[in-house]
Image (tube, rainbow, N blue to C red; front, side):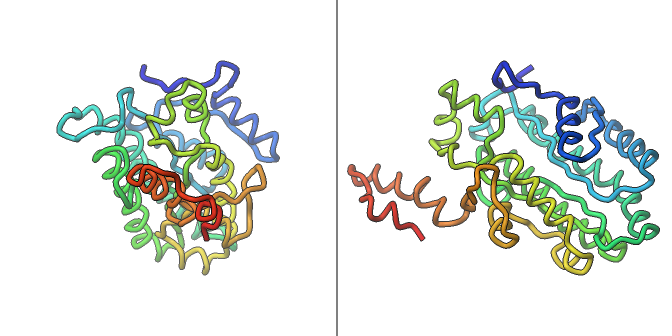
Length: 278
C-alpha cells in the first residue's frame, strides 16, 4: 500500500498510542478509522463531544506519504501526488476544523475556563519555502492560511487557532530510513541525529494550551516554531537538548551553507568556523 517501513519490533497502533497516553496520566481512547474517507472525522468528533460534553483542544497532524518519491517536477508527477499529499493532509484537516468549530464555540460559551478552546494544525517549513515538490508546499501553505483565516472568524467566539512548525523530526519511519541507508538521498544529507523527538512538539502544544485566554487569543492564527517556543517557554527535548530552529544560523550553516562552500571550494570549512556558529 506504499506504507513507509519501520522497525519490526515497534507496535504502532492506535491502541498502543492510547495505552501510552493512559500510562502518562491521561485517558487514552483508541478509535481506529480511515481518515481518507469523508464523514469519518465528523463521526469521531460527534462521539467525543457526546461522551465528554465539551471540546477543548483538537490537534490535526494526520498525513499520508506518497508511495513514490516526493521529489520531482510537478509536470512529471500525476494528480495522484496531489491527492496523496493533500487528501488527508489538507482536505480532512479542513473537514475536522469545520466539524469541531461549533462544539468549540459552545465550549467557550458555556464552560467557564481560563484557557480558550484551541485548534492546533501541524504544518512545516514547507509552507514558507520550497520543499520536496509543488504539491507539498501548496498544501502546507494552505494549512498555515487555514489557521490564520479561521482565527479571524473564531476570535469573537473566544476560540483560538495555531499552526505548529516542528523541525526535522525523528519519527519511526525516518529513523528506519537511516537504518536502511535511504535517508541521505531522500533528505538531502540532513543530520537526523540532531533532529527533534515527536514528544518535543507535544511539549510545545502543552505550553500553548496552558496560556491564559488573553495571551492565547493574541497569538491566535500565528505560526509557532517548536524549537523557538522551547527558548521562549524554557523546555527541552527528551534527551535534554534544545534543538536549533530550522531557520536559525545554528541549523542553516552546518546543514546547507558549509556543505555548499566545501563543494565549491574543494576543501573543508575550518573547524574554528564550524565550532563557533552563533
